[in-house]
Length: 175
Image 1 (cartoon, rainbow, N blue to C red):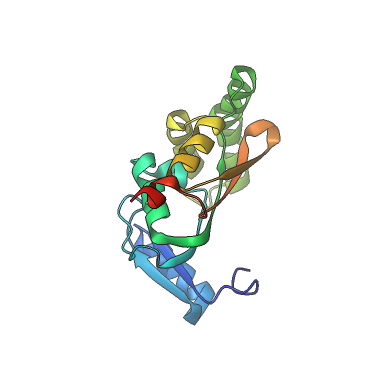
Image 2: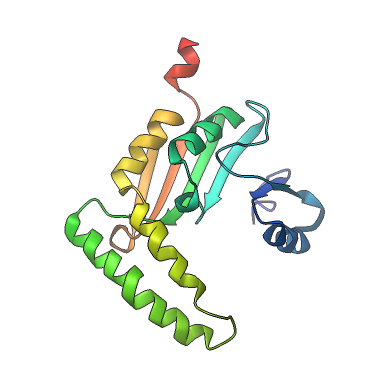
C-alpha cells in the first residue's frame, strides 16, 4: 500500500529477524529489513522522509527516547504516523477498554485461533496496555519530541492514530 502511494522504498525495523524475513517475502525488493529497536535507530539524522509505526509503540522500553529518535531520523518537512491501541483519558472509558483488553479479547482470540497457534499470543497485549500512557499524554510527548500533533481516536479511545509534521520543532531551531 505504501509503495502504491508513492513511497520510494520501505525500511522495516524490528528486533525480530523472523518477522523481517516474513515482511521481505511479501514486499520483495523495495523493502529493506533492518534489525533494531526504536530507542536506538540506525539511521543518520534527517535521513527519513517519514516514520510510521503500527501497533508497536506500546512495546518500546523507553517511549521518550524512541520519540526523540524518530524526530532525529526524520528530515524537516517529514511526517510521523502512529496507530496503536489507546488508553482513554476518561477513567470510565479507560476501565471499559481495560476490561475488554484484559478479559474479553483473550477469550475471543482463543475462540478465533482454535488451536492454530499454541497458547494465546493476544495475552501479551495486557501488560503492554497497562504500562501505556493515556492518549492525551502520548499526544503531548509526541509534540514535545517531534512537533505539532493531531490525534484521532476510535472505539471509545481504544484505538488511536497520531499524525505529526516535522516543521517546527523548537529545539532544532534553538540549536
